[in-house]
Length: 389
Image 1 (cartoon, helix red, strand yellow):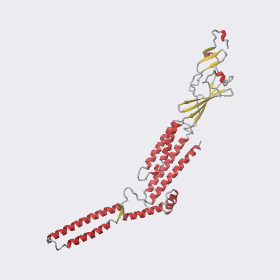
Image 2: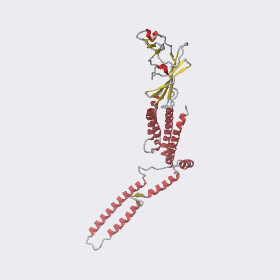
Image 3: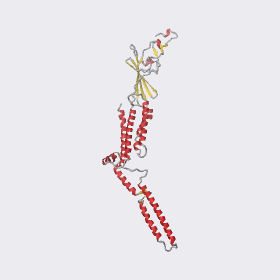
């Protein structure tokens, strides 16, 4: 300390090198600096005539902190950087009056909020038993970006898996569609792990993706089995038919499929005898042939009994008779061909219809059951994963 008036023109402050005055020995707890000889850097020290010494240090400090990523992307992290003095020294919190009204000065009663990258950081100061001074960092990740880019697409992909059971088995590739969704989920899983440090625990979102991929793989195998069942012919055993086509179908709000199948087969038999054309029903095609035969016989009879009043000669009548007979035979053959084609069309289900069997109905029941089970397991996996913390 000195009297400024004794040193004209009233010297009140002096600036000296930090190595020329006494400075406290401070050690950073949990120091992660690569150089083990890391020390405080040299800087200017301001000495006031009142005896107050201000030591301002600008340095980059590296420390290790523990991150719990379970609630990613809404995870938080607390990180403490503590300095310890020597054995015969102690640390106290500066009062607000001792800061020279510096608004950027952080005391033990305040905090500072800053934002860097995707993190919002709340910084506060704490002194413990005058033997340790700590900077407390509370970091909160900005989650809006990750929800829009990672979480929402994963949920949409998981819901799209339901379409696998809605695609008709004979129209589209179910297995290829499901495998594409699983590969997309793998991409998002890698994207999540790239944002987090490698450690033993995984975030809940990553666990949910792994569980969803497991479910997708299992239901894809079930789908392969359903596709094999769908193409079988024949009837189911009575017990299996009663359980799946009657009891389980009613639970799944599909009605009694066994009765529906019986009505379909009865209508199919009727459809083989009659075919709707232009809104009117026509008789079985081969009855037209018989009718045409009768017409041909009547026409031939009319030719054999010519009108005696005509002036045609016998040769003209014989030529006319032969010509009429040839025309009748040609018309008969054309009608036979037309009737045969119509009969084939009446018995052919066509490209848009399928031969429905009991195994086909069983495949439909299993598809509906898989949709219900997948939705229930997918919804139940969320609280299950959150309970793992």
